[in-house]
Length: 50
Image (tube, rainbow, N blue to C red):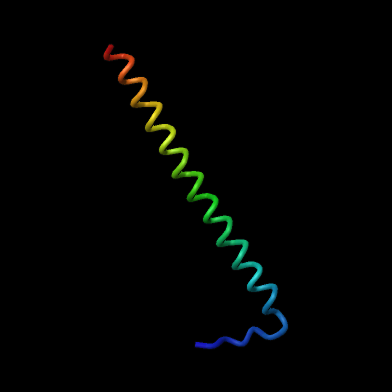
């Protein structure tokens, strides 16, 4: 499947690149925040059990 984008190829490909980069950053931010929050929750639970 070969799509000819003509004179707009650079604009379309740049938009795809930016979109993929933004989605990647959002997923990574979610994963790191989830890990940090899980770790904090486990720490607080262990402190309350002591």
